Amino acid sequence: MKQTYTKKQKLRQLIYLLIPILITQLGLFSMNFFDVTMSGHYSPSDLAGVAIGSSLWVPVFTGLSGILLAVTPIVAQLTGSKQQDKVAFSVIQGVYLSVCIAILVMAIGSFILNPLLNGMNLEEHVRKVAHNYLIALSFGMIPLFAYNVLRSFIDALGKTRVTMMITLSSLPINVIFNYFLIYGKFGFPELGGVGSGFATAITYWIITSIAVFIICTNRPFSNYGIFSNFYRVSFSKWKDILKIGVPIGFSIFFETSIFAAVTLLMSTFDTNTIASHQAALNFASFLYMLPLSISMALTILVGFEVGAKRHYDAKEYSWIGLGIAIFLAGFCGMILLLFRLKIAGIYTNDPIVLKLTGQFLLYALFFQLSDAIQAPVQGALRGYKDVNITFIATLISYWIIGLPIGYLMATYTGLGAFGYWIGLIAGLAVGAICLLCRLLWVQKTNHPAIEEKKA
Picture 1: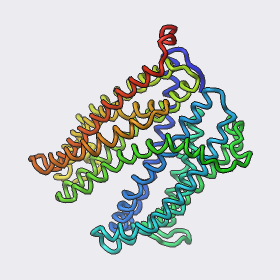
Picture 2: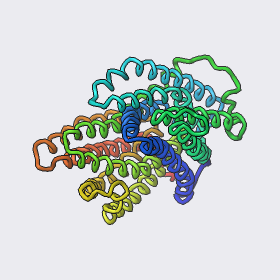
Picture 3: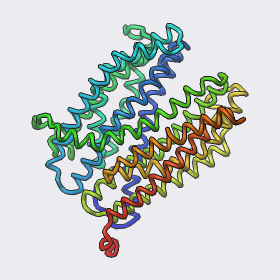
Picture 4: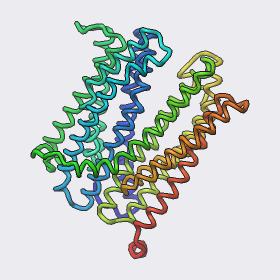
């Protein structure tokens, strides 16, 4: 990354970072998509088992990996303040912490997985596939969490195209091993849906190895000597990472788990309604990759500028990113409004499900604007290392405001399942407003008046 002097230069640098991040996020989204769809072609029960296993794993993974995202603003600020000599120590401590988190997840999972699955009303084969899929996936947890730290380091240097290429290379690897292990091709055992878990675990080991190789052999990464020295465990540095990372992780967990909770509450509705909800939510999640990617790019750029004490530039990046997100939300909203039935047709041919999905997608219009505000603002705040208020705002807006409103609207009005979506929209809107106010306050306190006058 480099210092910029005009809005045009800032826009160019933001887009330069943003596009590879977006492609990376879509690639990661696709990996889970291939696991589910390829298992579905093996058998419906394998599809159900993998889908259930995945729905249990994704909120846990996204929340815990969010803790490791703290490495991004830490490295970005160190780079901006010309303290490159401290980067290797921070990254290695992040790797140590990631290994401990992975081991802790596997240990806890060994105790709660069976009671959790047994508590669900599942057919025996579906329960078995879900259980074994998660066990297979656990073989790749250590490299997966370590890769998240290494990716944060690479991205923090502004080299987002590198992580894009690593992710894109992982997709054919994942699909090939899925084909071998799900269907038992070329001498591999035929494992059904469970095979996708092993395939994904193998993929995690491969992409982590690729990342380590690139960091050791390619500039500018090799200049930092990440793996050149042995560093002892530093619990004080872990504390610094956790101080920033835990609120980030919980914020992400509260955001992802609220949709899982709504899905569980909607189990009382008929199959067509549930299927329509899932289809519309899947497409809304796909569109969310846009503001999420902007958020990640802003964390890097704002952190870099804050580290260099260029608070006016950090402020400009925040508002440019927010403007892009709102513009894209308007564009996506027009697509949803005009083509919602065609979009619904991607998921189903059933006329009832098609109609209901189109109606759910109308509500997704309102998701777009709130996401376009809250996601980039969260990213900017992380660049400032301001994460505690985000955590509190997310908890209150989603779980104390959004979910209760949704339950009341769905239970005590004629809106039915759409009531839950109104609750989610209300929660997202409150969260977006609170976070925007927080960003304004942070920028005011971190932006000396004398610097603003100079600008």
